[in-house]
Length: 332
Image 1 (cartoon, rainbow, N blue to C red):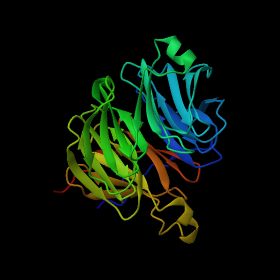
Image 2: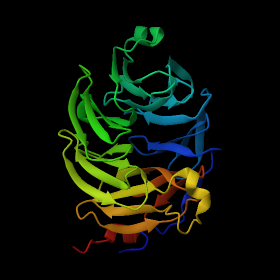
Image 3: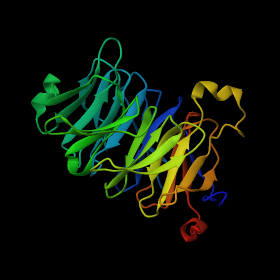
Image 4: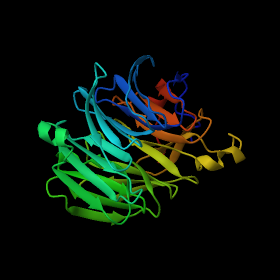
């Protein structure tokens, strides 16, 4: 067991007043987008942590963020009952899609032309996944998606586009995983490997696999096409987020106990470290301390040389791996 795979001093990003809800790199990895339980959407240079700009317009907590393939557009979903499309460079709001309840997840498809977002089940409204084609301005103007999928049983808590944009993979409050066709809206595959809410889903670089993070204290690896369960990474605390390294068989997990219980424990036993597991052996090989509260979102840089974590403490930390990490061989 290696105690810490990261030695260089992290870059600390201070741009939010409330807990971080999601962090996301663009495809090249030069930019890092961060959203939190405040209305601010920030974008940073990942290399030095300099703040590039802010997308202003939301009036509530922002739950999700995504950037398209060529980083032209940014998509955000918020508790202010809206999903918004922004011009990445200028920060101008290009589209405002109003909803009946909070927008929990959002994402661009592979081509960047189609967006999907899911809304919460609240205030008498059920959970929906909506699909808009950005090439058709009438859909945006009339606020009418070309397809809306109702989720009657348990609400969607995380969702991503599957390979080639043919489906979306959604994780639910009850622990189920569904694959919905982006053409017909039907459920293509349904599995239940988690016993509690799925907090996060992240795909591998080649989109053949994805990792889930759950309140049942585990993260699990699945095949993107068949949803076949392949590996399980076990901890003793809820897992809020998990990410796959693009160039090693490594997975990083972030979590900690429920935010409301945090005041009752010291940071030493709060289990607020990012934890590194070997993908094939399901063995933990390192931990990185730093946050003063649960980690809510983790992301690997697309080049695999660094990773970032966003916490309940409102900070985002960018960690660069030291050379030891790249030479580390797992003793099987």
